[in-house]
Length: 166
Image 1 (spheres, one colour):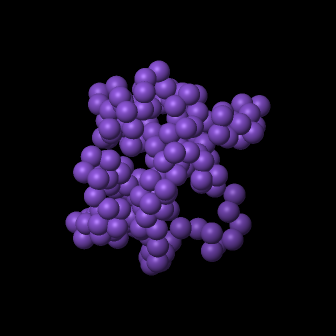
Image 2: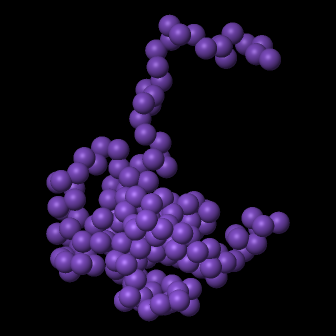
C-alpha cells in the first residue's frame, strides 16, 4: 500500500534523466560482443591489439558500450593466454588448436572473466558465454560452450559455485 503521494506515478512528471539509457549489464553485453569479434580478428589475422581496438572504436558506435570493459577484455585475454588455455585444456575433449575459432574466442573471454573478474558472478559469465556462442558460433556451439564452462566454473570459482548449490 502506498502511503505517500510522492510514491505514486504521475504521468505528467518528467522522465528521469537516465530513462532510455542502457543499463550497465547491457553495456557490458555489447562490450563482450565487440570483444568477441575483436578477439576473433586478433586470432585469425594476428594484427596488433592497439590496431584492432582503434579500428573497432572507429567502425562501431560505442555510445551504448562499456568501452573500458571492451578494452580490458581485448587486452586481458591475450595477456593471460597461457593461464587461460591452461585452465581450459583439462575441460576439453580435443586440443585447443582444433577448436572452432569463434567458440575458442568465446571460451577464452569467459575463462578470462572467471579468472580475473570475480566481481562478475560465475552464472553471469556462463550465461553471457552461451549467448555469445548463440550469436556468433555454429548451430550447436552454445551447447559445447555451456558444457565446457560448467566444468570450468567449479575449478576456478569453487566456493562461489558451492555456495550457489546450497
